[in-house]
Image 1 (cartoon, rainbow, N blue to C red):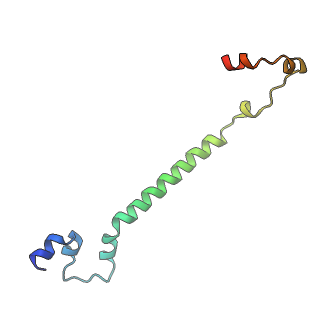
Image 2: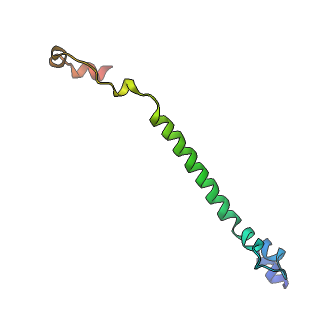
Image 3: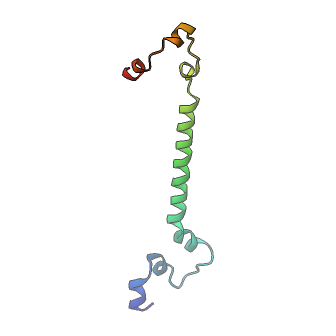
Length: 85
């Protein structure tokens, strides 16, 4: 490699200069950043999915139970009072 090629070459290309690039180590090092990004993104997605599923699966029976109201309550319902509270 001449001096101009060394200045523009990646460290991996300099390291594997004159060596066998076919057996796999060169490709593994060349695609390392992509593989790490995919792994971190996948783990983040799995953790977020697990966290949200736990929030959804939580016992929220109070929110899902119907509130019993009488007919008199329904007729005397005050929307302005609902907005205040």
